[in-house]
Amino acid sequence: MGKKVWVDLAHPFSAEIPRWPYFDKPEITNAHTMAKGGVLTQKITCTMHTGTHCDAPRHVMEYEFDGRRARYTHEMPVDAYTGDAVCLEIHINNWGPYAKTRKAGYNPDYDKITRVPTLIGPEHLDDACKRAGIDPKELEGMVVCLNTGQHRDFDDSKNYYHYAAGTGVDAGRWFVEHKVKCVAMDSQALDHPLLTAMGNNGMTRMNLIGASGIPITEEYKNEFGEEAYAEFDKFEYIRIFGQEAYDKKFGDLEAIGNWGTWEPCHKMMLGHGIVGVENLGGDLDKVSGKRFRFYCFPLRWYLGDGSMARCAAEIDEDDINKDVPDRTYTYGGNI
Image (cartoon, rainbow, N blue to C red; front, side, top):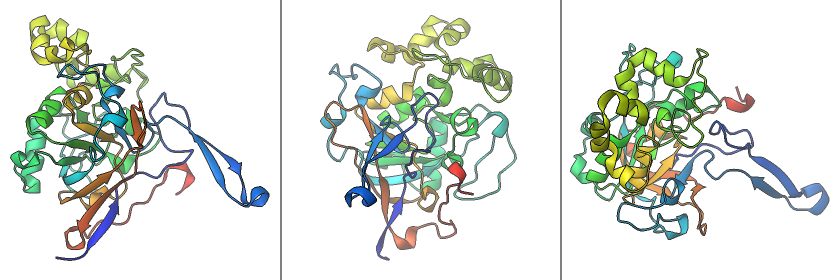
């Protein structure tokens, strides 16, 4: 065994950090400067779900599945986001005009694109466990990091926000079934983008315009068909498959006051006490497919709904993927 080393798994934070499509831009100002006061003191104003961050149950729901009022950040255990971990490599396409099939680990090349729906399900998670050499039964109490490859494209772009692959209700149930402790994902949210307010869900229901000039919901229908798209839209699901089928798939979420196709993986996980981390990044490819100790601590924020956080892996140096270069970031003018 080699010595233990640290690997940074967080994106760097700045006023120019890429952020959710309708989030405010971080503002950073100086309360004191070295020239005037002999000290540097800075003030930051931003949404706490910017960059690499944690979600608490209260962020997405009023009640958890056991009937309790959904918990705030300060009510979660201090080690809720920390523990023994494995990084699962998810082999799946992103979609849209920038679609790429990710190879395992770091690789600048891509496989041939296969046009299949981009919702991460139990079959992808089981396959990733097999390739990582871990039985899903071993995941109880562990942190599961998902490497879809999307973190390599972190930027203020439609590619990163609109066209990521992502999880949904079936993946959420898989995490619950296997009693994982925390899920940390390397894309814009725990859920597929069309299961968020970027699609036809949520109180804002933005249904954002895609690269083709039509809404991303229509782009998905055109690419994969109405039945595949229905997984992302309550009203389309009921129209195509019927109310009974909808109730069978999403009824447990609806029973506790949730819109079934609006961030269902978030709610399935958080409603069962499994917390989440979004926009995982940094040198994630160095620990992809490996086991390690994952560290992540949100602010001890009273009545908080989530918090930006620094995430890191503690891993035996002999276990690191040696062929992965140090991460560099090209957004914000750093070319």
